[in-house]
Image (cartoon, rainbow, N blue to C red; front, side):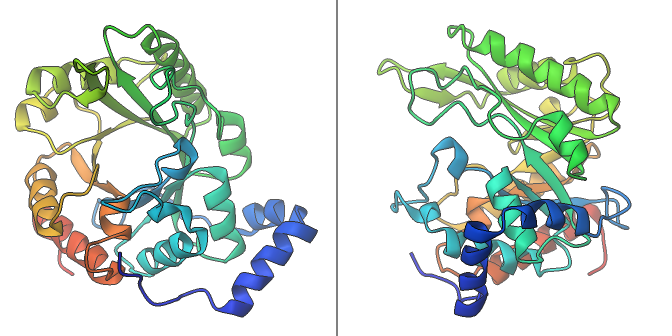
Length: 305
């Protein structure tokens, strides 16, 4: 896989490593020093986030490279390149990634969403019992973040779905109590004959999953949905604001862009949350991939560049 140009100089990288080893309190200071944005949506009423919470769940592969996201310096380079585009409103990540970006001064004026449940490790027997192992609502509020994201995979034949449902409901309520966005990513899965998890993409399953997610917690006032590219009948199932997720990248970025664009035209959809497809495009040009996605979002919402 082609690598983009280095954004983090050797000196800057060395300083980050030294800070990690010698000054752990620098993380707290970086949280406190971050210049926050006053609102989630851009002036155009959209929200475009890059996602980088995959490594914490053991999902390191992109395409044919099983360790693409394991190179942390490369990942941070790619994130900083994406965040440099003014159309990118912010980032979604686990504490390690967010704190590294903070220490690199990369999140001033950006929306920051903390990823919460990463315990459903890829390929683990307990994968659907997706424990909350990263940020919690208290830490998200105390760190000055803008919201929390949770993954909710629904597998009717797997009892691990039940505690995940309950934990997500509690997190939605706790975030709402603090006036913070709860971003829920409901995905219906089933196991095939080999026991592997397969995403159910039919409208009935997707609409059901979105409806379940919308009803979690004591209030839906601060709930947003993070959904795969979906048909209108799926998106019509809720009034909650939605963001289109990038998902597993296809072989051609143009195919992904076209798929996102169709869903972005729906009035409940406010923007994009994309990770691997933009951070690891086939040609290695992160900046161009991010700008192409920004243009699709602008075109779908009738926004001037």
